Image (cartoon, rainbow, N blue to C red; front, side, top):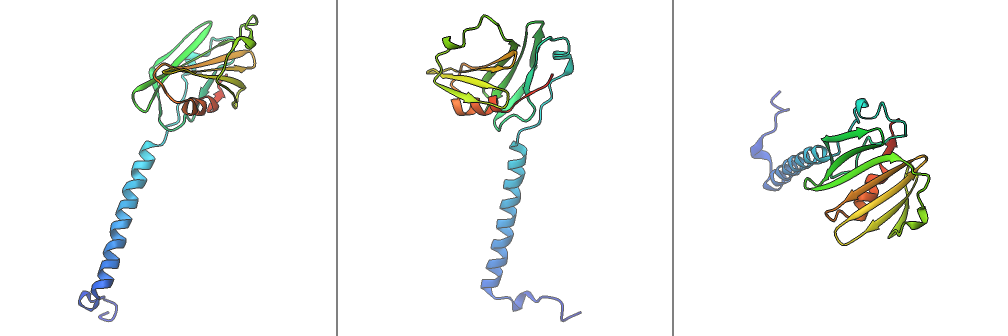
Amino acid sequence: MAELTIKFSALTRRQLLIIGGGVIIGVVLAILAVFYFRQSPVPAVLPQAAYQDLSFRVFFPSQPPRGFKLDRASISSTPQVLTYKYDYMGKKPVFVSVQPLDPQLDINSFRPTREIDTNIGHGYLVEYDTRTTVAIIAGKSMVLINSPNGVSGNAIEQLADSLEPVK
C-alpha cells in the first residue's frame, strides 16, 4: 500500500504546476458549461386555451432562438387574431401576431428589404432605422413579427424560422 501512495515531496515543481493548471482549467470549463446551459433557450408551450377556438392555423416557436424569452402574460387571442410577445436580450420587445390571411391582401404592395424562406412559408422582411418587421404568408394564415426597438433583421429572421404549426 505504501507503494501506491503518491508522495507530494517526490513531485517536481513542474508537475505540480501542470496538475494545478489542469484543475483550474477544469473548474473554468465547468463554470462556462453551467453558464452556457443556463442561457440556452427554454422550450415554450402555447397554452391550448389561447388557440383552441380559433378557425385558422396558428404558429408558435417551440424552441425559440437564443436571446428570446416569451412573456407568458402577453398571450391573448380573439376570434380573428392570436398575439404574444417575446423579450429579446431581456429588454427589447418583439410582438408576434397570427391571423387569417385576408384574400384581398396584395402581396405586391410589400416593399421588403429582403425576402426570406422560413419553415412555415415565404416571408417579407423590412428593416427601418429602429423597427424590424416580417410578414410571413403561411398557407391561409399570416404571421406578423414586429420589433419597434431595433432588433436586428438576422435575429428576427431566426425567430421567424423557428415558428412551427400548433394547430
